Length: 489
Image (cartoon, rainbow, N blue to C red; front, side):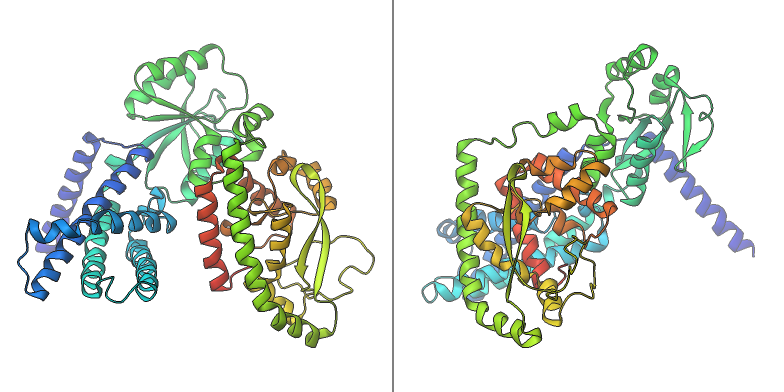
């Protein structure tokens, strides 16, 4: 019994010492620097794996290992490093919140290496015999799996410790502040620690909002920033900054505290734009430059559309006889289905799809939301919707220029008119061409309500704000995974 008591006391002493040390240490890094750190660590781990693989390859072949052996094979360093970097980005290994989750590290590293191996094997069978070494790549894959996993696991262990989190003080304990606090909790953010709220409402001070304390008013902000060693102050208020609050924010900036607007941090955390917490000025500024990108960007995007549309047309030609036969044998109705949708700027066009519902799906002519597990869908239609093959004929819309490969999904004008009345800035999604797939489709499941439309709009506006060819390639890559898993809507 005495030994047990001593053990408990020793444990408490150790924990107390750890808390004392972590209360003194404070070395937060912004997300941009964390991404650079992840990239630097990957460079070291992958290049080290190449070097070790070359050493093992030389040993297996009975060759002396040294500069003379490495020099003619130098190209493996940039080649494998570049391929790894691209695939690691596509598998979210440079997304900081994802990189913090230790349980996902081995699976994501293995997935990236599996994709790299698939590409290597494809080249191996297409290139001349013995053009690519098999034994060297086998050594590299094994060593890289170990080295990158160890590095990523060490990062996820170290950089989720309290001293390395950025400490946040939220100004405003109203609706926007609560939404942000809940997003931080729900996302299980290991990069941020919210110390509490600042609010000038006396009724809120001394209480808890979303489980966090309201520490005081704007007059006490500088004192709170110093006491809690705050790194970022988040503005979650809708009224103008004036008087004592404005001066308090200036004082906090003077001591090196970073100011963030609530929509910007929320966007960073969730990859969505919080449309209910922004005004017209913010939206116009966020979407500045659309729908008029540069000539070079427009040309590159159109080339991507034509390339993907042509590949899709080949796939459509190969699958068309089988799908046509399946649809005809299922219920004897027409194979294709066209429907008016709103395109760029709201201009109507007819979208082309394989028919997945009964011919009497809308007997009274009134538009209805499609539902998950919709009983109006045919047996073949359910399979086509699961694999998203019902959307394949839309490659014709892409080649015509009515749609793009990536963009917000085209919606029916009747639904747009209805949703515009209930959702702020809903029409903003029409500043770009609709897409065969999109940011909302790879992040959010099936939607059949106004609430779902709101969430999808938040994803769509994030895509529009950050739209680039790299982001389009990311969405295309993720969509292929959705199709292969059969997790479509």
